[in-house]
Amino acid sequence: MFAFKIILKNAFRHKTRTLLTIGSVVIALVAFGLLRTVVSAWYAGVAASSATRLVTRNSISLTFPLPLSYKDKIRQVKGVTDVSWGSWFGGIYINEKNFFANFAVEPRSYLKLYPEYIISPEQKSAFLSDRRGAVVGIKLAQRFGWKVGDLVTLKGTNYPVDLDFVIRAIYRGRDKSTDESQFFFHWDYLNESIKKAAPDRADEAGFFMESISGPLLAPSISSQIDAMFKNSLAETLTETEKSFQLSFISMTEALLMVIQLVSFVIIAIIMAVAANTMAMTVRERIGEYAILKTLGFGGPRIAGIILGESMVIVTAGCVLGIVLTYPAAHAFRAQLGAFFPVFNVSRRLFLFYAAASALVGLVAAVFPAWKAIKTPIAEGLRRLG
Image (tube, rainbow, N blue to C red; front, side):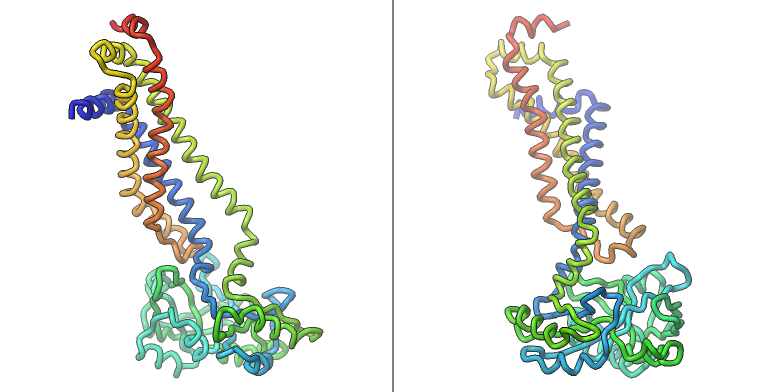
């Protein structure tokens, strides 16, 4: 108890310095947490992928379409239990700043393939029965203040048509990793509009989605599908949903590596800041430690006092960092939610906070403690007064 009182009083003897150090720890941990959450958000689509879903696209690029007739051949592959299809519409709502994912799908099979989209039976029925009906995620609806029954117009970018929709359903995600900021509608509605505006682009799908009877069948089924269309005018590339998502992430892999590197550099910087604070503290109190030695305090106890002071400072910063991470993440999500539809702070991140803080506190105290122990009593007493 006596040692704890000494540690606590020493930690806050220079309040300004201590508060600035704690503030540095807080800022560093929150910055680290946001950067790591950005990386996790980037991989959110991968985490939400199902092992029993495949995606078939044009082997050249996702921007090249596939004939709609492919769906009947894909259904015949053994192990394929259901097939759906869709096209990326890429429509603009009001202006270019309002970016969000919007695409046309075959509604019944698509909703069957994605049970993680929770829709009430009444809204689902209304959507399926309305050719102009659209389904939006709860986050997207909250972003624009949409509600069921609202009229929404999207200006075409990939297709030369503007489409009017009636919001018939708002879905929620079954899991935390489910993207709740999507907008999807009837593929038939888009196709009928394309037949009038650009007939040569009608009856084409941007991608096919297949559910399979087991994840172990994915490689063989993928090979069979691609073999059927080999040497055709539109060859295919079939891969698991996870691989499909990773193909997009690979385009920004270098950026992700930089973000991860910067996150660890932040921890190294705060380690240096804490070490500097403890070095200054020990240098100022070297005479006091000499007195403690004359009173019978051994090296381990003095080292424990210095380590304890360091741990008090970083622990305070860690606790405040945990408390402030949530509002910081909320503010980040509010500003960049369109680019990171799934931006959830993982509780495991706080375990890293604790581990990083313990490491910082330990490293910051090692050299100052060694110096305090090794300094002779006579030399330390000379610094008094």
